[in-house]
Image 1 (cartoon, rainbow, N blue to C red):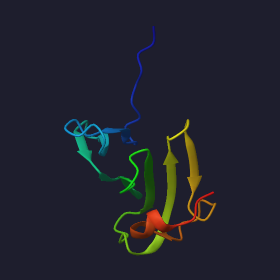
Image 2 (tube, rainbow, N blue to C red):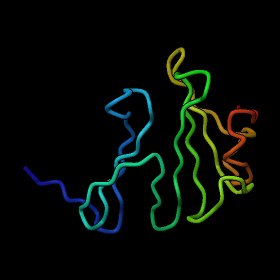
Image 3 (cartoon, rainbow, N blue to C red):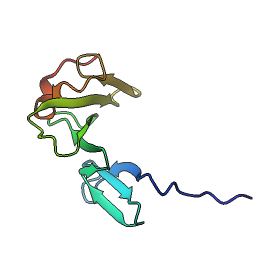
Image 4 (tube, one colour):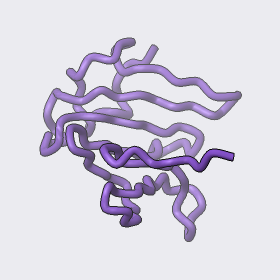
Length: 112
């Protein structure tokens, strides 16, 4: 059997939940130096990732990507809404994957 080999140029990321609350989204990454990192924000070489739950509905999660160093108040984010209320529904802010949204406004944006 062939042994799986990790691509040394990539960061492996797993999305899970916080052990204490079992609801707080947490990113777990294995860096290219084989270190384990956990955070609600993880930056890769080119993009920063933000992950958050909806303040009023634990079945709704948001995943945002932007260039590393982008302020959460800048209109430079691609934002997805992941709704697990009835199955799994994944939609984009403004209905597209364009990086023109403000992460801080994620709960009030229109998704389709």
